[in-house]
Every structure is written in C-alpha cells, then in structure tokens.
Image (tube, rainbow, N blue to C red; front, side):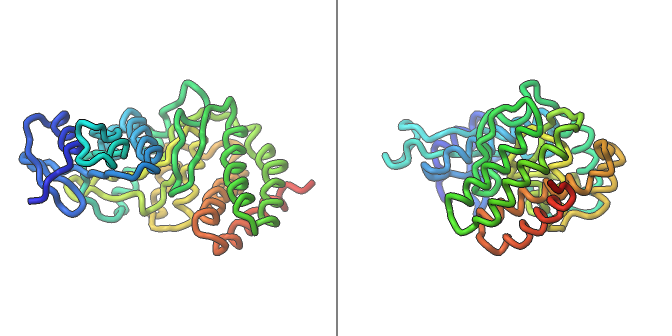
Length: 302
C-alpha cells in the first residue's frame, strides 16, 4: 500500500478523525470508504491552488453540493514536509466524485440550479473576485469593479496584453482595442444587472453527472462575480452540453434586457474564450477570434 503524504493525511483526518488511508491512482480512500481527490503542486502553482479553493468555497455557499466539497488546501509546512524541497508547495483536498458525462436529465437540473441558486448569489463588493483565478493556465487578475463594463473590459484587456507581450498578434490586438472602445461600452454600459457568482469556465469538460446520485456536478472553476450570461459562453463554443440546458436555464432566468442584443452579448462573451485559447494554444484560434470581432464591429460601426 502506497503511503499518503503527511500533509494530505492531516487534512483528511481533520475532516474525518482517526482514519487511515490508502492511495489509488487518482484519489485517496479512507478506511470508512470515503474517497478524496488530492493534489500536490509545484511552488509556481500556489496561486492556482488557492484560486480553486476560494472558488469552490463560494460555490458551496451559493449552491451546496453542486461542486465537490473542499476539504482543505494550503501549503506544506516544515512539520509535514518529507524533504526540504517540499516546504511551501501547495496541496489540495476535496471530496471525490465518481462521474460520467453530463446527461440530458442532469443538464436540465444543472440549468435550474445555476439559474436559481448560483446565478442568484450576489456579491456585496461589486464585480470581480477577491483573488486571482485561472481560466486554464491564464491568470485573471480580478480585483473589484463598480460596473460590469469595467470588469469585462479589464478581462479582455488582460488577454490583449498577454498577446501583445507574446508578439505576432498586432492586427488581432488592434481590433481587440476597437472592441474595448466601441463594443463593450455599447453592449454593457446600459445593462441593469447584479454581480452574481460565475463558474467562469463552464464547458462540457468541467461538468458531469454523479454516478451515485444522477445529480449534476461542476468542477475546475475560474470563478468571479459578473453577468450571468457570460457563464453560458464557452458551453456554446465547444458543445457537449445538451441544448435542453440553455432552454431550461432561460425558463428560470430570462434573457437580460435588451433581449434583442442577447446574441451580440453572447458573441462578446465567447470572444473572451477564443482570445484565451489563442493565449493558451496559439494561432489556431486567431481566425475564430477575428470572426467574432468583425461581427461585433460591424454591429457597432464608428
């Protein structure tokens, strides 16, 4: 039997006193049969681990049991380190969910829970989030903003700055600045909305159906408080989430007024993910990013 790292064992024993554990390929199982997802990262991943923990805490408050329960997170200290090089490395423990892909029935339940619970949970500090979160490997600096327009402009601006630093994306960045100047104010300034909790990266790969209960599960969040419609964007891009999800969602939470701009807002919110995929994976996503920009800029000419 492989030995569990002392930091992980201590975290689980705080949650479930007196247990012994054994390692499995992707989780740790206690003597009571409970399973835990565990991770130990590198020193450079400390912010990512903290971000996931804070996002899961927020989701647990907004929509209990929709995401795996966070058990513990932190950094390995000298007391539990097995070697000096481990001190300061982040660790993470949550409950383990045995999942399969999102079924149609679970998708409808997920839509209802998002619309009535998670997207009803409002921030008291504005738009944004208290700590940086990560969409894939991309750091979202966050902070707090008085308006959604300011918050979303900062998110797009952060991606454009990364592309400018990388070089080779001058034309894309030029159009991106036009989006910031012309489109974001035109589409977002007049919205009457509240900052609600978003998952932030809600595509099919971050959703599932609990094999034991049939209930929907979401995980790997890059949360912040924003416009609820922004959480639907990446689900449309990559598919895998049934159409019934969107229909059911808007039965409980109608499209924001002006509803006739819903599709344009969707294009704007999808643009974030196309730009982020350009940051993460390179020029293969430039065409899709440019196409979204061109449509938006045609809708809001000088």
